[in-house]
Length: 478
Image 1: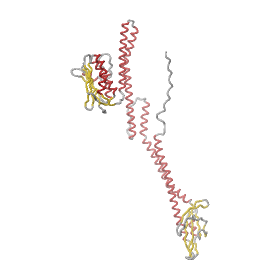
Image 2: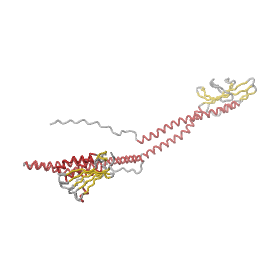
Image 3: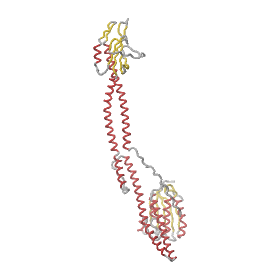
Image 4: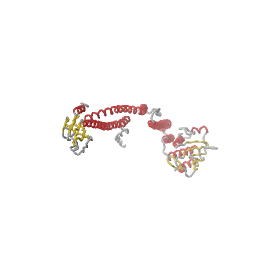
């Protein structure tokens, strides 16, 4: 006895086809709110630069007006100066008690006359024109300040003099103004951003509700273990969700049809194999009890006949199940295929005493499945040879009828009663009690015709005989 073959190690489980990741809701929130945050930060930076520029312009305007006001307080008298400055300087200093303001008057420029601090002048490379305000930045005691400088000429033409007035203000006021402007600008924008984020979140949640309902429906059906495969219904949903639901409904329809075919096959097999298998068991048990060789041979003959019938039934059931799936059509010459099948059945026809022939065009193309059409034609010829009778004629015909192609097998046998014509394509229906058949041949033919988008018909001939036709669409040409 052969040693048992060791079991191969189990293959590693393949990774799940759907890897976990961010949910659609989170992805939408990320792609909508993240750009909003980036735009808010960029807008804040731009707003800060704009506010800083406006604050600088405001300080420059204030310094320019103040330095000119101070300069007007210095009045030339002949070759000298009348300075009425303390009161003006005091007014300027009292404009903003929180702000540091320094001033200096020098004549000639750089030579301190009066003021509350010594202020540096601009770079030596900078050209200073009389009666023109010059603005520049300096650092005094480590603090940045903005300085306005104005020089005026006075004195006699013979001895001209120049007076420099400088006024400096700390840039802290600029920072304060900028901060206030930014706060006034960004606070409403921040509030609007929060409101927009809430609206985006609510809109995404509402927009994804159809997907949530779809998920709930599929989850309920998963709990029912494939007992409910009815179409999914979404009354109110976006077009994209409707398209997804349509695709799922098509899948459910395919699965339902496949399960129905499987259930029907199992029921047919159980129903049809029960009787012949029981007969085989019964005949085999009787054969074991026989001692007479002639009787034993008779029992074994019945066992062989039952086994052959069971094998034919299994072949027909498997063929029927195989033909119920979708088929891939391809261009083929139906006339050539029919002649080839007829030639294959010629020896069987000669043995049965039947004249088997072919009539039709030399070439006739259509879109079909060669194996299925060969199976259908073989079943039709087999039925005709079995039931037409010895000495009859069986004709295989192929012809074009407009956009359709006609494939038929006609015989001049006894035919069928008119009442039986409506039952010939039913499964397991038989009009004859002759052994060998199982009532599935013509059902297979009808299934094959339907898979090609056509139909099968049967009608009696005059004066007697039967004609089985397959009307098939021509489909794609060669």
